[in-house]
Length: 340
Image 1: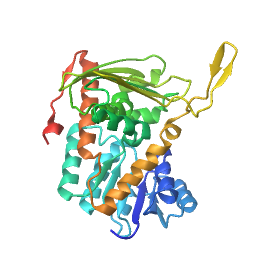
Image 2: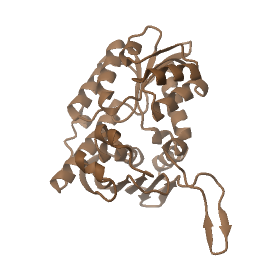
Image 3: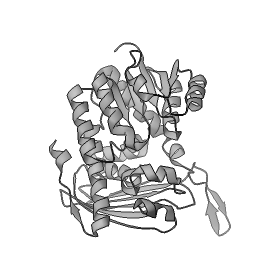
């Protein structure tokens, strides 16, 4: 493909708008051709702000549009699989926000559709593209910490999302911890074989009506014998707190993005710094880099480094964690995605 990749962004919430703005202003060889949102005012306003030629309230119209080469799906989670299948049938390159689906059978159907169509498909696991995490992965693969033995991941949001979001999110394991499940596979270079999920309701009583918790812990066992734990919390109040440690036989990598910038105030008997307020700020570079990688794959005709199979495997871990929470016992993964 010689010309710029003509992109349509479907869904213009915080995440979708971030992608649209990046495509319009920061992504090389990409053009924001169209946008879609169920809110006509939102769609029209965004198109005007970012210079998109077309807007609509019907995402399906843009998937079928001749003037669109690639679709970026940032719609509510329960629409992801259907839109992925539609993009595959239309032969459009696909960037799909996580998770692939909330249902394993549906996720496998979407993965099969993407594979059969042969379209480029990239999952929105942006942390893989964050410079710190990408650097750590390269160093781990080079053997700098020896054999990876244990991963510890912390994901704490400043406040729980509203009830309407919780109702469609699929729960804390599929909505929040799934990023860390993908990171665990990415950084450890290994597959998860057994999951134990635990959780509590500490602050957000709204989550109970959806069979969810606002604090969760997932214990992971890997095929190699390595292990790990993933902590998720919806209401830490002080900011957006994402930290990861990978312990190896000869060293440890510790990755943190808690500090907003490189300035620390030192005063008598105490010090302070500004904490990152949210995910868009913490992973600003990662969102840009992942979209550039996707566009580059479309132009070069290459396979994205994180695709539908990775989305399926992460969802399999999240589904097992939820089942483990309900059963109060460990759950072995069926590994159906791994065999696909």
